[in-house]
Image 1 (tube, one colour):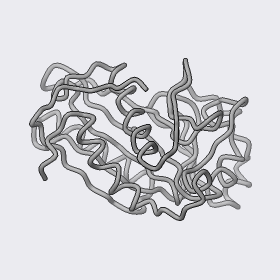
Image 2: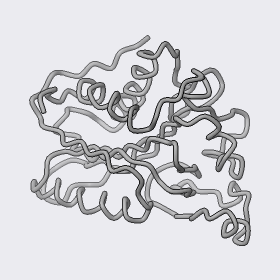
Image 3: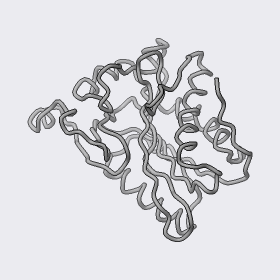
Image 4: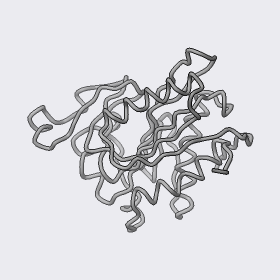
Length: 232
């Protein structure tokens, strides 16, 4: 397995597990933090959380990949947002660990491509710690177990206004809860990909890992893989 090892840095990273968050509130928080990081008022930050049932469509959106009409969406209580990350449509809901890294890329020595591959690597290494082999698929972003996607990735690179470089927002969605694939994902064509399915960690392992437990396990891997100091 190819490793994406970065040089060790002493850069500080704040990590917050926020629990259940409305999508619009978390989106507003990302924008605020990106501005603060740009103005050097805040350290690089990783937000870990869950969302209530939500569909988001990125900048490569295809509305036809949403298979519900407005009445059906209202009946199911699912909100829809057109957002500014890359990619097409995906689902967020309880039982899914969502991670929003808000990082000034220059501080961790990354270009845009290597940032995406490193984000995937964090999840690949976390799965491997549990004995689950996963991989990338050529030409696609995300992490796969066989032909089923377990983690979707969609990001935005915000051009800094006060210094040279980019600050990341949005991030990854890692499916944890058993049965998650049969919830919101059945009402969309996830990321516009029809030929492959979706799975979750607990479905693969027959375990009952919670989202918060997964978040706590991923934190040190994220710090190490991105070259942050492991000291809190």
